Image 1 (spheres, rainbow, N blue to C red):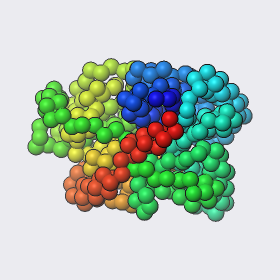
Image 2 (spheres, rainbow, N blue to C red; image 1 turned 45 degrees about the vertical axis):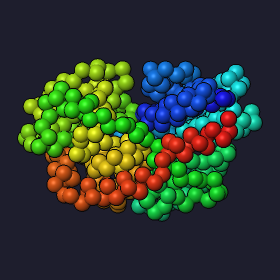
Image 3 (cartoon, rainbow, N blue to C red; image 1 turned 180 degrees about the vertical axis):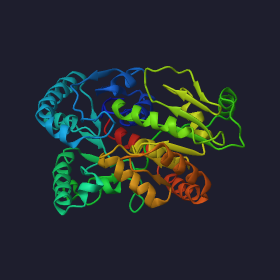
Length: 390
């Protein structure tokens, strides 16, 4: 029934996770699937049984403490252009060889340019159009002007796609609103299709088996500390979360997941009521049991938390505009607490966890968002749009 070419952004696993969900849906229709990506996403996709061509990476720069660095990223601009041109050439060769009916990019520009040059229809799934700066820099008018100008520039580039699908709720409840609103260069192409994140089926038997495996008590709150993103950004925060767990005093049960795709799947006990996974094979079960999730500010992970009514404590990557924007919106909705990463202490994390668990308003507001999300099924909506091109 045709062929589809999927090209997710390679930093972190959120974009690849979305594309794998789409691929699974299309594969059931007999659609031929090919992937292209880079970084950790390549191995992640291959392990799920799909062919993934590795393209030259275009990556941001990170500091040793896990924050986004504008200075070093700007210094990489000449290398970016070189790698980007190589990406386009690679994508042209791939598409010419596979002859897909449609290109689906998740937050990558080079596949859209290649598709345009080859005359192949293209779709982009996107939850960031503008390049947001850090809150401190945005206090200056010139910085806000820069954001607006780059937003219009990037909007013009994303306009290469035939359709721009935002995996979010329509205004005013758009979690990525700070990142996608007020860009005129995208014209009328933006469509809000609903959250595009895993909707796992809760198997009570599996949940109960996981509860027994980890010796969790139903009478105590459970916190899932699920840290995703580039490797350089994960480990410093995980160490801080381990330190924060010492303040829980066995009143709170917890699971920490490092999110390492090729890591050990065996749980390691690090406290009387706490476990550590390099890669958590029972992620869905732990997620279902949890009363609160501590995470970064990635769109896919936050979408899933809202879909399942889980309040959050977000710790966005420092100076990472997209994650900061998402986290600010979550705080505005009253669905969680945002912690600023700069000079963050373990005690602040522990206090935020305690506050979010004790204040029922966070759960009430999250359930409100969950009910809104139930009216839009992002996975089904995107799948139907893709099918129309096959």
